[in-house]
Image 1 (cartoon, rainbow, N blue to C red):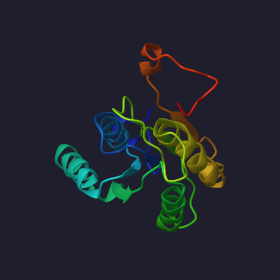
Image 2: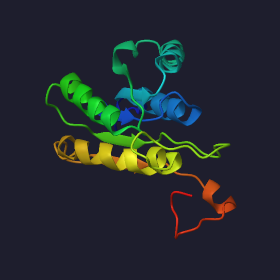
Image 3: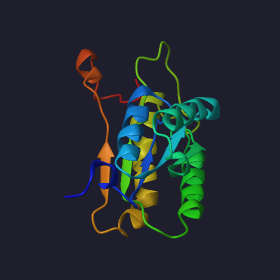
Image 4: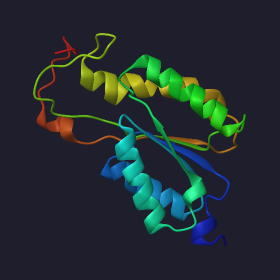
Length: 166
């Protein structure tokens, strides 16, 4: 039986929304099991804070944590993220994609650069595009996985299916 620290040895995971508490917890768990983790988020300073916490809590894992800024609400930064990951892994595959980035309860209506309602752009469309771009990389390893993180926050909202951009 493999030890806890080597369950995911030589595996590579990408976690969007890596600067939040859920993203940080996911990264810590993956790192503690031996995976290398690429964390993405909009703000580099937040990513670097999480990277420092992970280095402090998991000494010896420094080389297994990579950070890349990306705003999943913007199609061009999702494409840039894919290109950076493609260069970073040198043609290897991606074992795990965790689509975790998300927003909720914006005080005013906001739109993405492409004109999509911001919740849809961040929580759905950006992840769909990223997953599509990474699909060939995800097909390289025998047992790669895609995890889409969600919440029950929508249960408290009234959804008008005739206007998803409302």
